[in-house]
Length: 402
Image 1: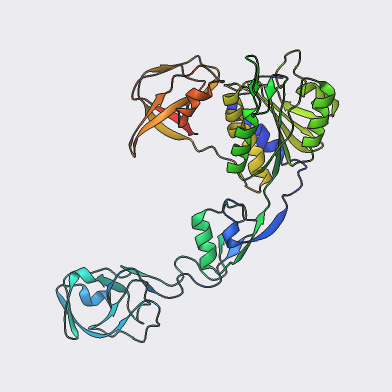
Image 2: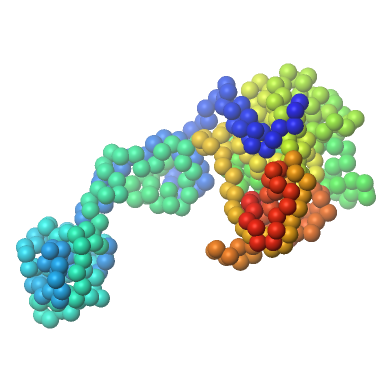
């Protein structure tokens, strides 16, 4: 198959996942259990928000016309605090002392802040004028009763949970977490509690993938390691296909003992991708078996991590009910000159330094896609695009947070 550019591979995966896919299952959970879940149904406002003209400041509710010229002396007819109804109607020349969050009196169209007032008995002198609407939030300006305020497909973070709570939603209808089977392959791979020979490695990929799956909102299921035997590899792949998504680590290349692609063909898989134009992570298999998405990720640890984040996570997001899967690219200035061979999109460990508008990106010294020690020193990946071979120190470059 052709070597697919990075963007084309992502678009192909997104297009293929939805074809013939059973809609994600729904469940209803209490509000304190929905963090990170995807909303399965639209949520509408149960009343106007705010439900009254709400003061945004401590001060005096006024008619803006009365303070067009300052200082202005007004008669204070009462006080309203948050949590009680307003009992007043303003006439010209009058004001009501008001607290933040309290309802404005009928007729008021602005609030003058406490800092610009001097109270003397029932007379207040206001030293600064305000335009109509200042510091008074109109009823229904945030949302009208019946208006959709959260759409299905929204990921529920703390802001969305706060909104649901304010609407009185004690239980939310959400999509269930997709179950993701994780299968490491290769005779050289041992359980992590083993003592390996110099030519063997521990199965760290299964645990890093499980962590990435959990972070993305899935439920990981780690399968036994598949040896370099086609029959046992097939048995374990068939077991993994009982989950919503199958991730294989290793065996996706073209080596003599790489059996993943062979077994997938025996299972009548539709194979859409076998290579992508990125580094690390070039040998990537994306297929569907009986409608189930399968990814054969390269076995080098950092290749596994990157290909999950930029490719396999698309499937997990869509299976979880999200309408899209976007990469959170940032931008930073290079700390030093950087060059690479074009054609491939490269993801290289780096460190972000600074803050706000003065963020620099400093590549980390590493020994390639198996260097977990080097990766642990990084907090992001520098992203070198295939259309350019050189960046000077101070040039802007894309960054993918780790």
